[in-house]
Length: 236
Image (cartoon, rainbow, N blue to C red; front, side, top):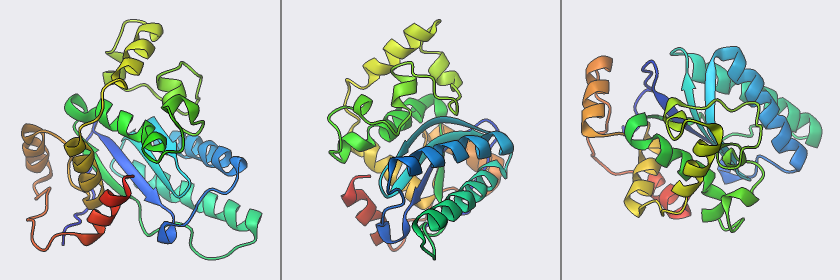
């Protein structure tokens, strides 16, 4: 099978995606987005997860986080999912599942890919043609990372902090990164690694993770993955 069990390595960030069931909407009103972010902050603080970037799309969510312990992400997503589904079912008098199975995630080589994944996440609304620029979209971390808005649930990653000595310098330098287009092959790699729970990083990083985990970290490549192709074609 292409999908491998989730990995945890201390200090490594994770890119998480969770989609609505059958690609259906999971947010219906502005108050839904606000409630989700409120619960994300509560769950992240409770289970020791630092949230560095996020975007809430109509039918899926992207998060870039660093967990404090092996079970931190799973505990956070379980608690968050339960609270949010209860809220949606009560608010809209519905029943049944809201999410499409379990969330998907990949380990991120921070030195090589952290800022690329952060931009990938915050540019989602632009790629989806919902807005012309990331700053126009309310429900993402861009306004915090690139515009200085106080977003309580965000924790600055060391890679982000290294962009400058002051907050103003970091904001300016981070925003300038968005002038460069993310190459198509990098977009494809992010999507494939996250969809299949592979490791996103350099060959050296992958070798280190494989040695530390004492297990294979990538698929042997047999049989392909038609579902991943659908995700790629949708450009999320």
